[in-house]
Length: 321
Ligand SMILES: NC(=O)c1ccc[n+]([C@@H]2O[C@H](COP(=O)([O-])OP(=O)(O)OC[C@H]3O[C@@H](n4cnc5c(N)ncnc54)[C@H](OP(=O)(O)O)[C@@H]3O)[C@@H](O)[C@H]2O)c1
Image (tube, rainbow, N blue to C red; front, side, top):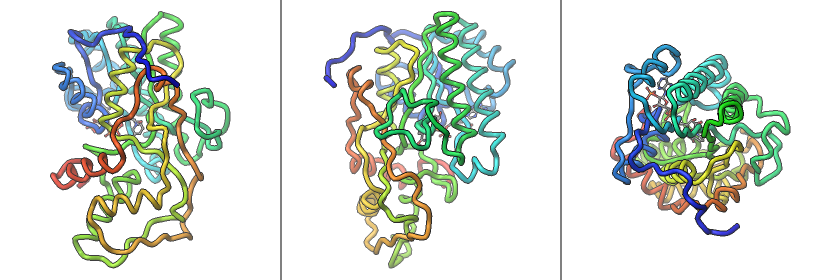
């Protein structure tokens, strides 16, 4: 696909912009990307505005009247949490999406971006995964609660477009990492988990760190500041019903990733793979040709992004430290 930038359909400059979930990894990065353009986003802490409560959301929208909404608030977590708290992943995400999208429509919001995740796709989707793969097969059962809520969010945004001509769009990022990541020992994603474990192993000079599985599955990782740029780009250059994938277009094996994280952290011991642990799907990579055709490309090389993430970790950034 070409690199030509699609023409601008919408200008963020001068707009009142609400970033829902600004204290999270994604919302924080979007708020910083807006600040880099001289735009101060409107934000609200959960204590001020619980997005699960419809009356609070409607009152907030009618009082503050944002013109643009980035919906980066969600109830997120790993496989383990999905298994134990299925109601939370389904109900909380449905409520947040329904409340924010409907209140945005009622308040006359001009543009809204709904953020989902690549887990919306069928477990056995063809690789790289195209946007059209949505609903073509069964989901990964371990996180179907979350995935179904996110699919409902995409459909909800589409339904307001179809019924009211609302300019609501959706972006589905691949695995993210970077500033503000979650380092919880059980609930973190792979990069945050590896970073914490190698860091701790370095401190105690451990001889060996054991990584689950064979190390051969391939995954894609996007630096969260790049995702934030993509979010701003699609708000300004895209207006259609179809959700868009967002990733680097490149994957790496878990073994190579683990070696790279160990290097960045400065862990000098051995890496061992516990092949008795499950590997998961062999490959998961998004097809990002639509976003490339709109003129956006991820720009941060993995090593550089990992170094920035580790600097943030050392500075005490992130959650569950
Ligand atoms: N992280 C990834 O690898 C990844 C990958 C693909 C897609 N995404 C998507 O990006 C979005 C954001 O994820 P994230 O990683 O940034 O998650 P996160 O760090 O956990 O942030 C989520 C944010 O939502 C807020 N929130 C949750 N429930 C709320 C409620 N009832 N009322 C008000 N605020 C509420 C949280 O508030 P508190 O600060 O009060 O908890 C937090 O600020 C999600 O849609 C997720 O699917 C993430």
